[in-house]
Length: 105
Image 1 (cartoon, one colour):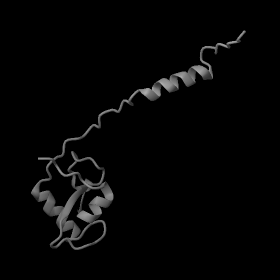
Image 2: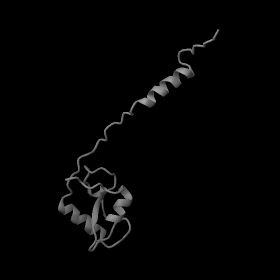
Image 3: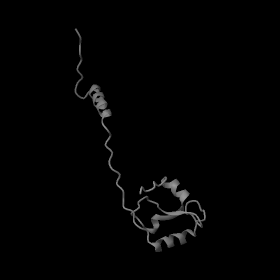
Image 4: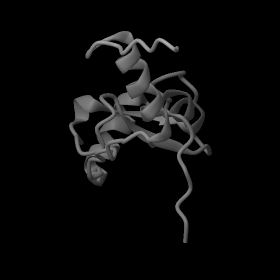
């Protein structure tokens, strides 16, 4: 004769069973909410560039003949306030935000 012990509801066995079932399911990932990028007016770009004296505001590299970006300090591309923007070289921008994926045509 075999003795079978039934676990009580809410026992560790129930938890293990539920956990094993969950391993078979794909995790539900919420879609990333992306804010709409706001164009930075040219006049504002000029003021930020003047404020930086033509240098990267992160490392101090002269921005003459190198690529640069306007970085949102709060990482919100819909916030074009002057106090939220800084001009930085591409190298610093990648360090701060990671590489930007190229758009597919």
